[in-house]
Image (cartoon, rainbow, N blue to C red; front, side):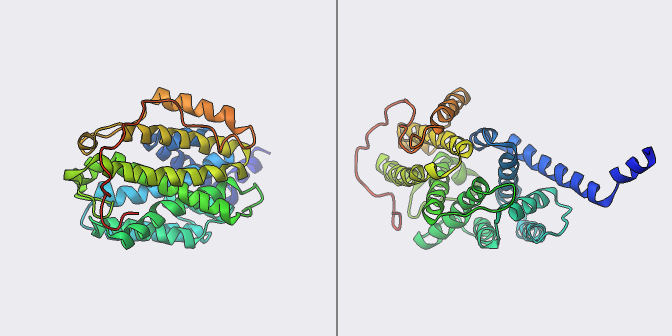
Length: 321
C-alpha cells in the first residue's frame, strides 16, 4: 500500500501539478514583493482569481524589469526569450520559466490569447528604443502596456472554474480605460524618476523641466474621465472582483488628488504616494460598498486634501489629448 501511494505521488501527472502550484506560488511572491495597491486589491479576490491575477502581474512585472531595471546590452534578447517562453506556455507546453508557466496556466483557463499578449511585448520593446513619444507612439504604448492588461484582468474576473466567460464590449472598454488611467497616473507619479534614471518622458511634447500646474491639470482631467468610464462598468463584475477593483480605483483616485495638490515643480522631483493606512481604509470602504448594486459606480473618492486649482490653461504638449 505504501509503495503504491509513493508511486502515485511521484507520477508524472502529480509531479506536473506540483510544478504548476510551485509556479503559481512564485508568481504570488512577485506580486507580494513589488506591489502594494495592485497587491492589496488582489488579496480581496477569491483564491482562484487571486492566483490568476498574480500570474498576470508577475508576467508583466518580469518583462518590465528586463527593460527598465536590467537595462543590459542584451535586454532585447532577454525579452525575446521571455516572450518565447510565454508563448510556449500559453500553447500548453511546459516552460522551465516558472513565471511564464504560471501565466500560461492563467491564459488557457481564462481565454487570454496573443491578441492581448503580443501588443504588450511590443510596448515593452518600445522602452528599449524610445525615450520620447509622439501622439501615435504614445497611443500604441498605452494600448499595449496598459489597456490590454485591463482586458487580461477582466478575462479573469468574468471567467468561471469551467473556463472563459463572455465579455460584453462596453465592459471591455471600461477595463481598457481603467488600465489606461492607471498607467497615466503612474507616469505622473514617476515623472522625475523616469527622466533621471532612464531619460524617458512618456507624455508627448511634455517638458518636465518646465512642468506647469496646467500641464498636470490637463493630464489629471484625462485620467478622471477614463476612471469615470471604468466606474460605469464595475456593476457588470461579480461582487468580490467588483470590490477588489473598486479598492484600487479609490486608491488611485486618492493618489491623483495628491498629485494634483502637489506643486508642479515639486512633482517633477518627488514621488507622490498614498500611505499604507489610507490604502487599507479605502479597501475596507470598497468592500462595504461593492455588495450594493450600482453603488460601486457612484461612490465618491475618499476625503483628502482639496486639489489646488491650476493657475493657467496651457496644454501639456503637442499630441496630447
